Length: 481
Image 1 (cartoon, one colour):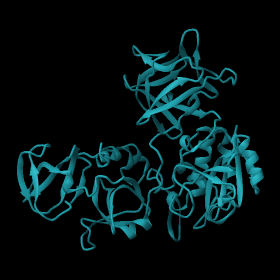
Image 2: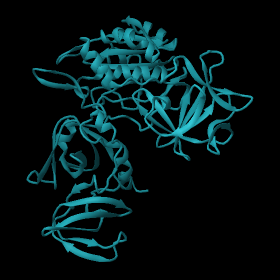
Image 3: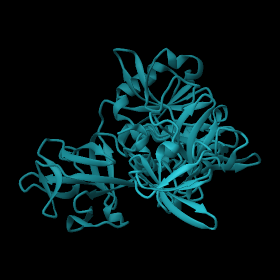
Image 4: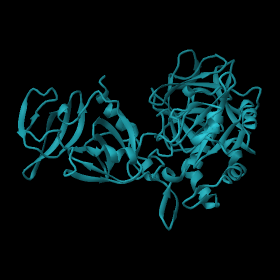
């Protein structure tokens, strides 16, 4: 598959409908369609051939330069809607006439400030203003311009941005992966029953919900297959959590489960039957999918060796929350994108610690409400002990204090804990240590050249954490509870 053909799939996961509000989340993800088309102009101002068929063999007409509404992408062809006189017509055109460079490795992009989109590579050809906190994709690049797509008011707009402007206003460090849960070993608990977990009756091969007992607690190994479909195996190797004949069973053949998240809770939907795992006083069952708390589960990750390949780094620029208000004052609105590193650093640290997801929006609201955000200055580190005291029990972690030496940090990390550290003007999460190389695994929520980090997580030498933009002033320590 050519890289450019992935555009249809990227639209499934990148764009948010609206400005990252709760109501917009309900519509995410969204695909390119007649309802949500791509609006754009051809690459050249010469006449454009329109065809009756997607094979581009039966010519319908030839049109002068104008705007087109792309309704569908099929192979090398685009199904477009266009205006002739006072009427609209539809037909097929070549994708080569609209997309500049098919070999370019496209990047999910996020406008941290408003940016002008141009219909062509000329500052005289502006046609739409993209607001701050809008999600998009960078499709191609040439010496002075990027070809991009951004979402606004129900449409995706295809156009050009000035390279020097985009390089200073657009971020590429959105959520690193569409994979909601990292591969690993988890205990699974129903939302409604405190201290109860999913377990297996080895004799009958059936599932049940039992009270927590650390020695008998059932563990499950999650392995991501594709598009948030997972195989869920019993950690002791007895088989897979599966569906057979419409019933929940434990068997050698794996079933694929779609995981979807609402806050810190997950739904598990069987791929074949489209039914969701649910629980009640009578046990576990498969029910019709609906927004029920009895279909929500909490995944708590076992302690295991963390590496770049099995951590998720949440970005403060992710459109799902980046545009959400952190605080408002005399200089206007401050958002998670502009001011939320202290919030997202804690999200990253706890998620790496135990797989518990804390909503950045929920954490930012708490921080502002209880005085842990100083307007136009940033998050106070008083947030960490306070939030742990208020919500540590819910998210299964505790605050172990604030320390100032790397020796104390290393001891804590080697004992299975994680940390949030203050570097100049920014917070980062530190979640593992390698004795052999004397390196720490750092998760950075904001990637744009100030620090030697990537959005995938990085092994950083101990000496690097004592100098320049990575010099750690202190560490807040966290562990499981």
